[in-house]
Amino acid sequence: MKVITWNNDKPDDVTPEGVNPNTDEVIPEIRKVQANIATYLLTDDAIVDMGETQTAITENGQKIIISDVNNTNSLLYENVQDYPDVEWHGYKYYYTSENGWVLNNDWVDPRINDDNLEG
Image (cartoon, rainbow, N blue to C red; front, side, top):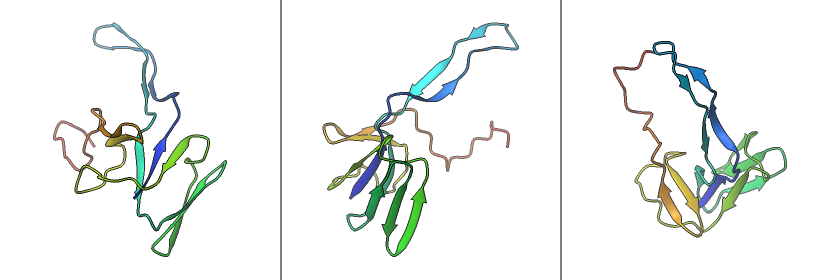
């Protein structure tokens, strides 16, 4: 298998400082770094061309262009073994060749309906 991960160490998910309207308490800025988060899992036969501005993937006769993944913000790992789940879910795991698969404790299954969420 092949895995593409984000490799940047800058905060990807920033919640700006704000004020809780119910308590007037200042809520500090929250920054989450997603370095090494696994975003794509591909077969060994996939052809991956990572350029400076985009990545092209050809797999099973289909070609896709990913404009926010490139050779300056992502890494491509080849010959990856032992994905720990039956189904693939992007952002569920971190991956490095040194540590293998590590669960992302902040991941929430998007298939779960939460009756408390308004849509």
